[in-house]
Amino acid sequence: MIIKTNLDEFNEYLTDASCFTGYSESLYIPESKGEIVELFKRANSEGFSITISGAGTGLTGSRVPLGSIILSMEKFNSIKSLAKNEKMLEVESFVRLTEIQDYLEGSGLFYPPNPTEKLATIGGNIGNNASGSRTYKYGATRKYIDFLEIILPSGDTLDLRRGEIFANGWHFDFCSNEGNRIKFDLPEISMPSVKHSAGYFIEKNMDLIDLFIGAEGTLGLIVSARLKLLPAPQEVLGAIIFFDEHNKMYDFLNYVKSIEAAISPRLIEFFDDNSLELLRPAISQIPSKAVYALWIEVESDGEKADSDLESIYQVAQKFTNLADETWLAQSNSEHKRLAEFRHALPLAVYEKIQQYKQQKLGTDTAVPDASLKAYHEEMISLFKFNELEYVIWGHIGNSHFHANIITKTNEEFENAKNIFNKIVARAVALGGTVSAEHGIGKIKKDYLKMLYNNGVINSFRQIKIAFDRNSVLNIGNIF
Ligand SMILES: Cc1cc2nc3c(=O)[nH]c(=O)nc-3n(C[C@H](O)[C@H](O)[C@H](O)COP(=O)(O)OP(=O)(O)OC[C@H]3O[C@@H](n4cnc5c(N)ncnc54)[C@H](O)[C@@H]3O)c2cc1C
Image (cartoon, rainbow, N blue to C red):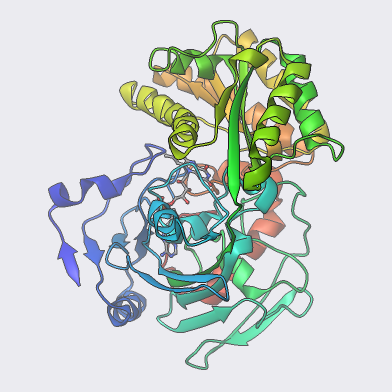
């Protein structure tokens, strides 16, 4: 075990991409599973707590310690095995998304979840049930987790295969590998039927593995995971289509999401006028008349690629005057250009927030498809009426926006927070969620209270206590 106690050597572990900052006196870097088990047992007997750190790209302060020791999984960074026939990949928890994608390149298989931040680790992705652009077609991380090797806060271990341990109705009763019994009740709730990652995953008769996915490290540490893969499509075609009108963009969106559409995208990502403005200094080719852009990808077999590209263009022509300005992508370098365009945006916003030394104020709300357009319009009016600087982008295919308010002073931040709260509350009122992919962490707990009453949040606490009666692991996340 490597232990660092000189703050200068681990300062960057005190924060994450939300800019929320905590404090700690030591960083522990274990080199074996046995060392972690030993540390967890000591924490229980000596009464200290531990916060697990992934790559720190999280946006809710969930890896940020509040006085606990930091446990970084960075030595657990190897890809263990690829079982091509079973379409399974076994990885340790600190393997980064980019490493998984590079490893599978050319194998004929792919790992569908595609969160924008490729430096994130698979442990962090599982901790938050991360999703990404392709979630529109393929779903979030949860769907692709077949097995988890877990160390529980007590120091016991759990090898958890999907399909092996289920709740009996709303009740769990099972044993750890060491034979210790764990039992608890689930709150009898229905989660919002939109893309959702706020609080524990709860369903009648659910699989136990699903409780650990999206639990923000509060119930156990993930040592390694087995990921389900899919056959890679023969060819992927991409396009960034620009629009000069709000309504036309929505007409296009509704059309491509309908079953009779001539093209059927696997991802649909949105950029508003302020996003395009922010990107223009670095990317001069953005058409001057564009107010919105959509990035889409369509899977194709090699032979039909040309006619599929033509279909994308023809559909664009029906819905926008800027169809001739569409950026098409077929080769790797062309795809890279579109992905970089998408990735540049959260980074540009992040840089601005850092420059003004403000905390991030970005929604992660998703709403039912039928309410999306009205929700979007309400947001714009609120921002404009209150003269706020804002940028909206996100996974519009899943009716999931990231609306970011950029504030320069603490006073501005407090005003903006009131508006932000209204937007989150409105998503809940429409049947949506307060967090579709980033989780609750330490900075979004008030929003979880908008979604669930005290009784439900107390039931979450009882689940936590069933695993962690001495409050050892990831304290301060979720509740
Ligand atoms: C530019 C940018 C773009 C982003 N785009 C997306 C996106 O498209 N979709 C999306 O979902 N998110 C996105 N994010 C957010 C972030 O990348 C994800 O939340 C990611 O899952 C965090 O992974 P990480 O390794 O950085 O984890 P961290 O931030 O280090 O930790 C996140 C949580 O996981 C827990 N954790 C980490 N490792 C383990 C482990 N081994 N066992 C148990 N718990 C663990 C931590 O304790 C913490 O609670 C983006 C962030 C940035 C900065």
